[in-house]
Length: 187
Image (cartoon, rainbow, N blue to C red):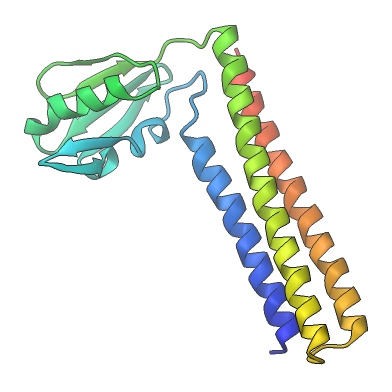
């Protein structure tokens, strides 16, 4: 595989990673519905180590406004409850000694707007990541052209291809954010 093609392949993989990170980040942003993804990454102090909640408990959504957390070790109940209370999710857990139940209250209009702003901030971060990849590609191609490894035409084609990739991934980022925003603003 030529250096040119290798650089372009690497660029596309890095842009895909930016999209994956955005989607992963957006899963943790609350909408009006109960979603286990809301709690999965929450870290719990478990036997002296911070452990993701989904590694020490089963998280389910028995109905659209309720989450249930069933720890595999009942000694972790209090630690899980404490972690949920300390998180910035604004949720209040209740436990019956075996299961922690978390009622998901409807979002206020003000909170919806705050979350929409947060989603837009994440979108900008993802766009910057994609643009940084484009900048790196163009820089690498310029270096290769100076060293005589690729032709001037390859450099120009590479710049165009990098811009096309960037445009495509930025469009995808905007679509993902539009869907998440609609989810948040849905009453």
